[in-house]
Image (tube, rainbow, N blue to C red; front, side, top):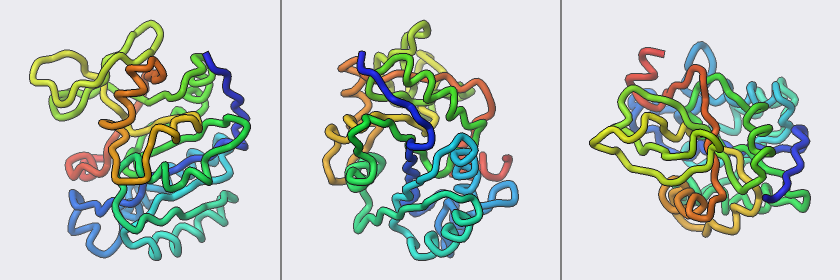
Length: 239
Protein backbone atom coordinates (compact mmCIF):
# COMPACT_ATOMS: atom_id res chain seq x y z
CA UNK A 1 0.00 0.00 0.00
CA UNK A 2 1.25 3.45 -0.90
CA UNK A 3 1.38 6.12 1.79
CA UNK A 4 -0.39 9.46 1.48
CA UNK A 5 0.44 12.76 3.17
CA UNK A 6 -2.81 14.57 3.90
CA UNK A 7 -2.23 18.14 5.04
CA UNK A 8 -5.62 19.63 4.24
CA UNK A 9 -4.38 23.16 3.59
CA UNK A 10 -2.24 21.80 0.75
CA UNK A 11 -5.09 19.73 -0.67
CA UNK A 12 -6.61 21.14 -3.87
CA UNK A 13 -9.99 20.49 -5.42
CA UNK A 14 -11.16 20.41 -9.04
CA UNK A 15 -14.84 20.98 -9.82
CA UNK A 16 -16.21 19.87 -13.20
CA UNK A 17 -18.28 22.83 -14.37
CA UNK A 18 -17.91 22.64 -18.15
CA UNK A 19 -21.25 21.04 -19.08
CA UNK A 20 -24.12 22.79 -20.85
CA UNK A 21 -26.74 21.88 -18.23
CA UNK A 22 -29.23 20.80 -20.90
CA UNK A 23 -31.39 18.91 -18.38
CA UNK A 24 -32.11 22.15 -16.50
CA UNK A 25 -33.16 24.26 -19.48
CA UNK A 26 -34.53 26.93 -19.65
CA UNK A 27 -32.70 27.88 -16.41
CA UNK A 28 -29.34 27.27 -18.09
CA UNK A 29 -29.98 29.14 -21.34
CA UNK A 30 -28.65 32.38 -19.87
CA UNK A 31 -26.20 31.12 -17.22
CA UNK A 32 -24.03 28.06 -16.60
CA UNK A 33 -25.66 25.35 -14.49
CA UNK A 34 -23.33 25.78 -11.46
CA UNK A 35 -24.54 29.40 -11.12
CA UNK A 36 -28.22 28.43 -11.03
CA UNK A 37 -29.44 29.11 -7.50
CA UNK A 38 -30.32 26.26 -5.18
CA UNK A 39 -31.39 27.02 -1.59
CA UNK A 40 -30.71 30.76 -2.14
CA UNK A 41 -27.17 30.50 -3.49
CA UNK A 42 -25.44 29.23 -6.64
CA UNK A 43 -25.11 25.42 -6.63
CA UNK A 44 -21.34 25.56 -6.84
CA UNK A 45 -21.06 27.89 -3.86
CA UNK A 46 -22.37 25.13 -1.56
CA UNK A 47 -19.39 23.01 -2.63
CA UNK A 48 -16.75 25.72 -2.39
CA UNK A 49 -17.94 26.78 1.07
CA UNK A 50 -17.76 23.16 2.28
CA UNK A 51 -14.22 22.79 0.88
CA UNK A 52 -13.10 26.02 2.55
CA UNK A 53 -14.59 24.85 5.86
CA UNK A 54 -12.20 21.86 5.93
CA UNK A 55 -9.19 23.99 4.99
CA UNK A 56 -8.91 23.73 1.19
CA UNK A 57 -7.35 26.96 -0.11
CA UNK A 58 -7.21 26.37 -3.88
CA UNK A 59 -10.09 25.27 -6.10
CA UNK A 60 -9.71 24.65 -9.84
CA UNK A 61 -12.81 25.16 -11.96
CA UNK A 62 -12.80 23.20 -15.23
CA UNK A 63 -14.83 25.60 -17.40
CA UNK A 64 -16.08 25.88 -20.98
CA UNK A 65 -19.75 26.98 -21.37
CA UNK A 66 -20.16 30.68 -20.42
CA UNK A 67 -16.74 30.64 -18.77
CA UNK A 68 -16.48 34.45 -18.58
CA UNK A 69 -19.71 34.68 -16.62
CA UNK A 70 -18.49 31.97 -14.25
CA UNK A 71 -15.19 33.81 -13.68
CA UNK A 72 -16.88 37.15 -13.06
CA UNK A 73 -19.43 35.90 -10.55
CA UNK A 74 -17.28 33.37 -8.70
CA UNK A 75 -14.17 35.54 -8.36
CA UNK A 76 -16.08 37.90 -6.06
CA UNK A 77 -17.30 34.99 -3.93
CA UNK A 78 -13.80 33.53 -3.74
CA UNK A 79 -12.38 36.77 -2.37
CA UNK A 80 -15.02 36.80 0.37
CA UNK A 81 -14.18 33.20 1.31
CA UNK A 82 -10.40 33.62 1.15
CA UNK A 83 -9.96 30.83 -1.39
CA UNK A 84 -7.91 30.94 -4.60
CA UNK A 85 -9.88 30.05 -7.72
CA UNK A 86 -8.00 28.86 -10.80
CA UNK A 87 -9.88 28.57 -14.10
CA UNK A 88 -8.90 25.73 -16.44
CA UNK A 89 -10.42 26.39 -19.87
CA UNK A 90 -11.58 23.59 -22.16
CA UNK A 91 -11.56 24.57 -25.85
CA UNK A 92 -13.72 21.49 -26.52
CA UNK A 93 -15.82 19.35 -24.16
CA UNK A 94 -13.46 16.85 -22.52
CA UNK A 95 -15.94 14.71 -20.62
CA UNK A 96 -15.39 13.87 -16.95
CA UNK A 97 -11.75 12.75 -17.14
CA UNK A 98 -10.17 14.93 -19.84
CA UNK A 99 -10.38 18.06 -17.65
CA UNK A 100 -8.08 16.36 -15.12
CA UNK A 101 -5.47 15.80 -17.83
CA UNK A 102 -5.84 19.44 -18.92
CA UNK A 103 -5.22 20.58 -15.34
CA UNK A 104 -2.41 18.09 -14.69
CA UNK A 105 0.15 20.87 -14.22
CA UNK A 106 -2.05 22.31 -11.46
CA UNK A 107 -2.77 19.03 -9.68
CA UNK A 108 0.51 17.11 -9.87
CA UNK A 109 2.90 17.57 -6.96
CA UNK A 110 6.06 16.01 -5.57
CA UNK A 111 4.47 15.38 -2.17
CA UNK A 112 1.97 12.88 -3.65
CA UNK A 113 -0.78 15.06 -2.16
CA UNK A 114 -4.24 13.83 -3.21
CA UNK A 115 -6.90 16.14 -4.59
CA UNK A 116 -10.69 16.24 -4.53
CA UNK A 117 -12.80 16.04 -7.70
CA UNK A 118 -16.49 17.00 -7.68
CA UNK A 119 -19.33 17.04 -10.16
CA UNK A 120 -20.75 20.55 -9.88
CA UNK A 121 -24.39 19.50 -9.44
CA UNK A 122 -24.03 17.42 -6.27
CA UNK A 123 -25.49 18.75 -3.02
CA UNK A 124 -24.97 16.64 0.11
CA UNK A 125 -23.51 16.51 3.58
CA UNK A 126 -20.00 16.78 2.15
CA UNK A 127 -17.82 14.22 3.98
CA UNK A 128 -14.44 15.75 3.07
CA UNK A 129 -12.68 15.21 6.41
CA UNK A 130 -13.80 11.60 6.82
CA UNK A 131 -13.16 10.95 3.13
CA UNK A 132 -9.53 12.02 3.26
CA UNK A 133 -8.98 10.02 6.46
CA UNK A 134 -10.41 6.90 4.80
CA UNK A 135 -8.32 7.53 1.69
CA UNK A 136 -5.22 7.76 3.85
CA UNK A 137 -6.13 4.54 5.68
CA UNK A 138 -6.16 2.34 2.56
CA UNK A 139 -3.33 4.18 0.81
CA UNK A 140 -4.28 3.35 -2.79
CA UNK A 141 -4.84 5.58 -5.81
CA UNK A 142 -8.45 6.63 -5.47
CA UNK A 143 -11.60 6.77 -3.37
CA UNK A 144 -15.07 7.52 -4.66
CA UNK A 145 -18.04 8.44 -2.50
CA UNK A 146 -21.01 6.11 -2.96
CA UNK A 147 -24.60 6.69 -1.87
CA UNK A 148 -27.72 4.56 -1.59
CA UNK A 149 -30.61 5.28 -3.97
CA UNK A 150 -34.15 3.91 -4.23
CA UNK A 151 -34.05 3.22 -7.98
CA UNK A 152 -30.56 1.89 -8.84
CA UNK A 153 -31.70 0.76 -12.32
CA UNK A 154 -31.41 4.43 -13.43
CA UNK A 155 -27.71 4.54 -12.60
CA UNK A 156 -24.47 2.65 -12.79
CA UNK A 157 -24.06 0.76 -9.52
CA UNK A 158 -20.84 0.14 -7.62
CA UNK A 159 -19.96 -3.37 -6.45
CA UNK A 160 -17.48 -3.34 -3.57
CA UNK A 161 -16.30 -5.28 -0.53
CA UNK A 162 -18.43 -4.01 2.37
CA UNK A 163 -15.67 -4.82 4.88
CA UNK A 164 -12.69 -3.12 3.21
CA UNK A 165 -14.36 -0.75 0.73
CA UNK A 166 -12.32 -2.11 -2.21
CA UNK A 167 -14.28 -1.69 -5.44
CA UNK A 168 -14.65 -4.84 -7.52
CA UNK A 169 -16.69 -3.67 -10.52
CA UNK A 170 -19.29 -1.30 -11.94
CA UNK A 171 -22.59 -2.41 -13.48
CA UNK A 172 -24.38 0.07 -15.75
CA UNK A 173 -28.15 0.44 -15.18
CA UNK A 174 -28.84 -3.12 -13.90
CA UNK A 175 -32.29 -4.50 -14.72
CA UNK A 176 -32.12 -6.97 -11.82
CA UNK A 177 -31.16 -5.85 -8.32
CA UNK A 178 -27.45 -6.30 -7.59
CA UNK A 179 -26.75 -3.23 -5.46
CA UNK A 180 -28.33 0.10 -4.52
CA UNK A 181 -25.03 1.98 -4.14
CA UNK A 182 -24.09 4.43 -6.88
CA UNK A 183 -21.23 6.79 -7.64
CA UNK A 184 -22.07 10.01 -5.77
CA UNK A 185 -19.89 12.28 -7.94
CA UNK A 186 -17.24 13.10 -5.31
CA UNK A 187 -13.73 11.62 -5.41
CA UNK A 188 -10.30 11.93 -3.86
CA UNK A 189 -7.44 10.86 -6.12
CA UNK A 190 -3.67 10.59 -5.94
CA UNK A 191 -1.68 12.46 -8.62
CA UNK A 192 -0.62 9.09 -10.12
CA UNK A 193 -4.18 8.76 -11.48
CA UNK A 194 -3.35 11.59 -13.90
CA UNK A 195 -0.97 9.23 -15.72
CA UNK A 196 -3.98 7.06 -16.60
CA UNK A 197 -5.81 9.88 -18.43
CA UNK A 198 -5.18 11.19 -21.95
CA UNK A 199 -5.87 14.79 -22.94
CA UNK A 200 -8.95 13.98 -24.99
CA UNK A 201 -12.70 13.59 -24.36
CA UNK A 202 -12.79 10.78 -21.79
CA UNK A 203 -15.24 9.41 -19.22
CA UNK A 204 -13.72 8.89 -15.79
CA UNK A 205 -16.63 6.61 -14.87
CA UNK A 206 -16.27 4.29 -17.89
CA UNK A 207 -12.67 4.65 -19.06
CA UNK A 208 -10.64 5.24 -15.89
CA UNK A 209 -12.37 3.88 -12.77
CA UNK A 210 -12.98 0.32 -14.09
CA UNK A 211 -9.26 -0.10 -14.80
CA UNK A 212 -8.32 1.28 -11.39
CA UNK A 213 -10.71 -1.26 -9.86
CA UNK A 214 -9.09 -4.06 -11.88
CA UNK A 215 -5.75 -3.01 -10.40
CA UNK A 216 -7.24 -2.99 -6.85
CA UNK A 217 -6.50 0.74 -6.63
CA UNK A 218 -10.03 2.11 -6.12
CA UNK A 219 -12.08 2.19 -2.91
CA UNK A 220 -15.63 3.22 -1.97
CA UNK A 221 -16.53 5.55 0.89
CA UNK A 222 -20.16 5.11 1.93
CA UNK A 223 -22.04 8.39 2.41
CA UNK A 224 -24.57 7.96 5.21
CA UNK A 225 -26.36 11.31 5.00
CA UNK A 226 -28.30 13.47 2.57
CA UNK A 227 -27.36 13.43 -1.16
CA UNK A 228 -28.98 15.02 -4.19
CA UNK A 229 -28.11 15.39 -7.88
CA UNK A 230 -29.57 18.83 -8.52
CA UNK A 231 -28.66 18.52 -12.19
CA UNK A 232 -31.74 16.27 -12.41
CA UNK A 233 -34.90 18.39 -12.86
CA UNK A 234 -36.88 16.26 -10.37
CA UNK A 235 -34.24 16.63 -7.64
CA UNK A 236 -33.78 20.33 -8.38
CA UNK A 237 -37.50 21.03 -8.05
CA UNK A 238 -38.02 18.93 -4.91
CA UNK A 239 -34.79 19.91 -3.13
